[in-house]
Length: 315
Ligand code: NAP
Image 1 (cartoon, rainbow, N blue to C red):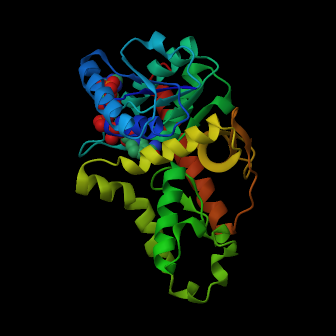
Image 2 (image 1 turned 120 degrees about the vertical axis):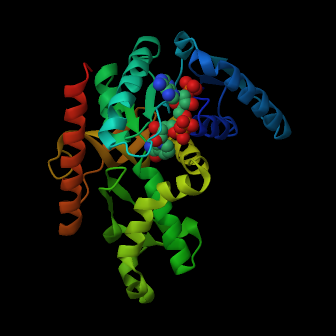
């Protein structure tokens, strides 16, 4: 199996690449960077080889700025993008990142049209749509990471609140990877038992947990400058699910065509069966009235931002 990571000199790109290399399932890992970062990714590859030798893992790692080297990739992880600076609106970030994402998405379509493209660059729901349009690839092959990471964060908060092993928690966050994310508490369970049936459920400060999940990424950025391990392992979950055709239900950003609450023409985080073909099925879930309202609001916000990006660029 061959996986390529674009933007590999960045925090998320380099951490994800290392995490994937450790997974034992790759034949070849390609680190892709702009020319100016080529030396840095060569250094990353050397450092990774040392660590992999310690674990007796054999992977061929190639560092390159030549997009032709994407050829033959099963999965391409796209992490390139400028970081949000103080005073920048979401739109200020979305336009430059859309141009970067569109450029790479076209290269993916040219050199690896049968691959699956996993978009990570923010704002990720908009960027997934940009990648889909610019690449012209099938909608099941262009996937965004966002709410899967939010779901992992929710899982941690619930496990800690109920003092239960994190592996027992099944939780899901859908909608926008951002302020309009929707925590599906109505279907969250611990050990297969819905949260509301736990005797200490009423001590659970739902408003506080929602705020904590929403601000989790920003909190990490304020404290250590960037999020790395969380996105890297979330990326690895999705990639290994695809490579091993696991058909897990993960929450990924997907192009909707009416499958959930009739929402169409926008990429949003939804539960989907993920396997070797990418998004194999969007799961048409039922939600509480409150969750439906929040999901429809997320759809409106992301659609309007996406439309504005398409109007402001020639993508
Ligand atoms: P970072 O350390 O600043 O790395 C971003 C990389 O993007 C750079 O190393 C560079 O890679 C590339 N890049 C920067 N400016 C560019 C330009 N003008 N043209 C082309 N490439 C450019 O940022 P990060 O922390 O890794 O985050 C990467 C992206 O992932 C951001 O958009 C961030 O918001 C997003 N993110 C998403 C999630 C999620 O759940 N979806 C989670 C965390 C972060 P090369 O020099 O190697 O080309």
